[in-house]
Image (cartoon, rainbow, N blue to C red; front, side):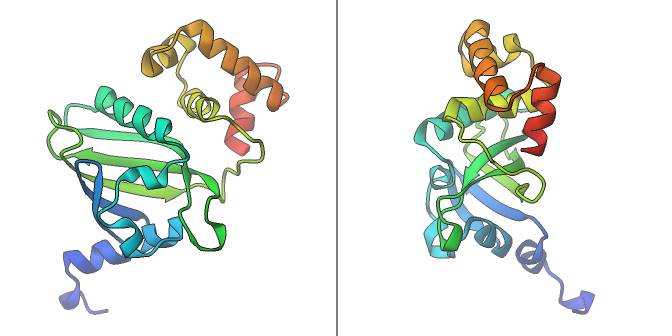
Length: 187
């Protein structure tokens, strides 16, 4: 394609990662890569809440609160989390996804934003059934947070985080937290 014909819409549509423009946690527009990643049609996602991409309502709510609490000064945010494919032959499948983006106004984090989604399933597979809270704690452990930091993020006690960490260590047969993180990264 000649560069004369390249415009922002073409760049948005052909980006190598999933992109979403949002307002008040509703998807206003998305690109083809995102549709393919989630196994959806444009009609199934545009105008819908991001909630349709999450395994549970609670994970959607907790992630929204975490985004508000964790925005940097410019409105940026990034994490790795478990998402849910909405349709196609893999509909309902859970997968690891790197999400990053920016709230256009950091004082109103959900009012308007631009978000990117990268499917990590080729690098990290979910081989063990995890509860929603275990998935959330696993994602924060991967980020290197301590029990105290995770507890503060999730508004639970550090001791509760330790209980969940113990369950994860048992499920992944990991004797130490660093080994658990290594296994989570390869899981």
